[in-house]
Length: 129
Image 1 (cartoon, rainbow, N blue to C red):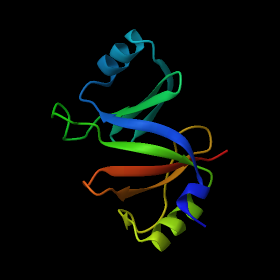
Image 2: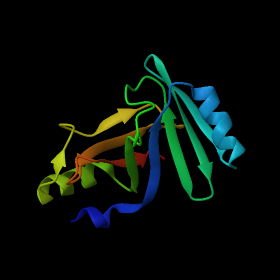
Image 3: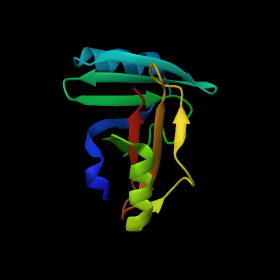
């Protein structure tokens, strides 16, 4: 099995923020809709969607206000564990030792990250149904 057997689409683009309310207001002004907002440890995270593009934005990341501060792109996967196994088999540089979970959305998410050739972060995310 390969990663392409599990990946279905773009999941989101991650952009850190120092001011979540101002970021939400800015993107809503561009036509995005707030589709989810959650606590994340001491910080908060919000998801905004415009047509097919979803932005994940969160507080507490030190790269805010630096050029190129897009933190990651995320790809939708049917099965995070199967994708993780395929990434290991293919020899990708995996950031985590195992699939991670967070309590976002109704039933949570499972995800993991790999590094690209320029040290860019690619997340594989399964929204648990």
